[in-house]
Amino acid sequence: MLFKEIIGQDETKRRLLQMVKDAKVGHALLFTGREGCGKLGLALAFARYLNCEDPGTDDSCMECSSCRKYSKLVHPDLHLVFPVVETKSSGADPVSDDFISQWRDCVLGNPYLRLFQWYEYIGIEKKQGSISRKESLQIIRKLSFKNFEADRKVMIIWMAEKMNLSAANKLLKVLEEPPPKTVFILIAEDASQIIPTILSRTQLIKIPGIDPESMGRAIREKHGITGQGQVEGLVRMAGGNYLRVMEAVNETEENRFHFDMFVSLMRLCFAVDVVGILAWIDKMADRGRERQKQFFQYALRIIRGNFIQNIKAGNIDLLSEEERNFSDKFSSFVHSGNVFAIYNELNKASEHIEYNGNSRLIFFDLSLRMAKLLKA
Ligand SMILES: [Zn+2]
Image (cartoon, rainbow, N blue to C red; front, side):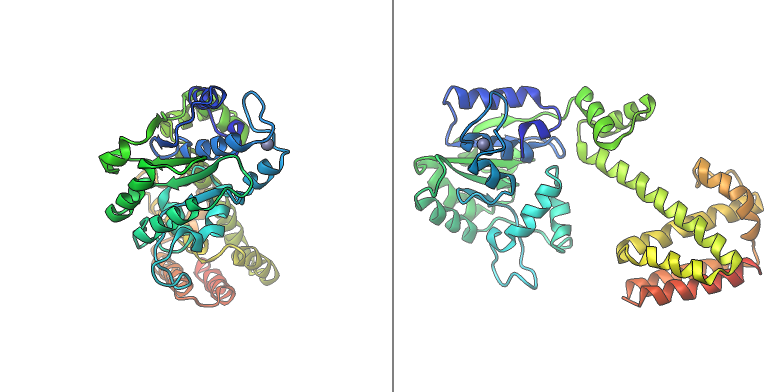
């Protein structure tokens, strides 16, 4: 991660750079800030800058041996700690190292990562992860080694509020007598959950939400959204949290995909175009079960909207403008004679996907039934 890759936060960047230039980097820093402000990215950029062999005035060089390793988060003197939980593959009482390659992939893909996304990534969304006592012992052990190559060893602890009490107490000892040439960077969303004895031994770096101007620039440059009203709306909605922008954009793209797929499936069903249906299924089969299920949810909503339109039971704010245009013609095919059967077929197909049925067969079957129902 480089400073220039982090959205906004100019003030914090300046402060961190100044600390390095003045040789006033404390041995333990605590980065706090709300979700989506970029604190993890800033911590990684700062760690990289600390060890860059040829740092520029405002960012790492990108060329040196340290930078090359940091860019993949594989530097031997960079240690990464984050909440984990026992999974089928991890074995009992796991530590961060058991998940390190997944965490690297996850963070490099999205440095604005929120805790729940990480849990989802490793398939533990129903459990609560933590940073355990065993992890603290591991930290102490790692810090007892001499530095491999870097001037400063960096220990990053992400979501430090997830340290349990015994882990925190263990860690406290190291923070009281820090090993030489080591910098701790704790990252937390909620500093009030960190025990006061740890808090008092760290230098606080409070990171605000992303300022509106930088957020607007990121929306234009990273997502190609240029309409002024649209950009302003997104900036307002985000309230300094870039994750919200990412989610809104994804949702729009996903919706677009579902709309196109739904419209084309209905056309193919009308035409009973089996070759076309098979090509459609190929496209859908790549999407994974979760998104296939989302497609059914989408289709159910559109069918509902069209039925309401057909029976003129009220205005259909269920549908977007584009969906309403489609509905002008399509709604006459969704009526009281077939709406329950269509509903039933979509729900059944969604359930079969959920229970790991063969998605190609499920979609094919559904298409044939839909072809029949739409002509009923
Ligand atoms: Zn460098």
